[in-house]
Length: 291
Figure 1: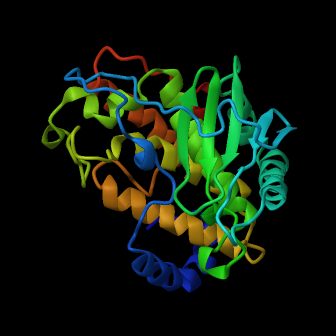
Figure 2: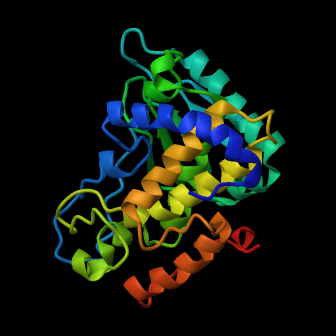
């Protein structure tokens, strides 16, 4: 595993801890489209697109806070014992501030998403994965109590939450803007066995598709690289999350992911992979990813 040079001393001390954590958690993704990937109608069209779901808060009087280009929406009826809306607002604001101060590149990327509508961060008030949704002119990242709970078992911190926002808004938001998120979920109508270099590839009727996650994880990994400090002042929590991202990419995309290449190079390469799998479909990439 090749890491940024100043991370080498930190990584050796932390890798065994991350491996233990991953095994205990069942290697489950914490940020994905999987939870709400249910079509609103049946269709045999492999490029069928109408699967976005009506937001839970739509038309209801949820607590709302506008902050630095984002709309924060609290839960109405959270689970007993879950962090309350005030804690949600504080922690989301802290993560947005972290991105703005420590990674201006990704703050610009985030604010470039859905310029004509609203970027919503919605607190569900119960456990579960983070997820992306779009409805009308809203791009929505749904955050669960799992992502803001102070219990040490969740290993939460501003950087982890910030990486989740980058993953969902930049990764999946760009896919939605290009109208390719759901076609990618279905491998653009291909038999998944025809796609080389990718492991764990369920077909279009079998649930999750790793295809939509590759970009999103690369953006999140790139973000973490921009905020990590020089050794010995490294941030242990960033390194732990970074190792998890690498393990996911190596496991799901063994023929695509290369530790020797920086994330922006892998994103450039992905443009060609996308065109091969989804010929004729729009892929805008992102200008700021071209370094």
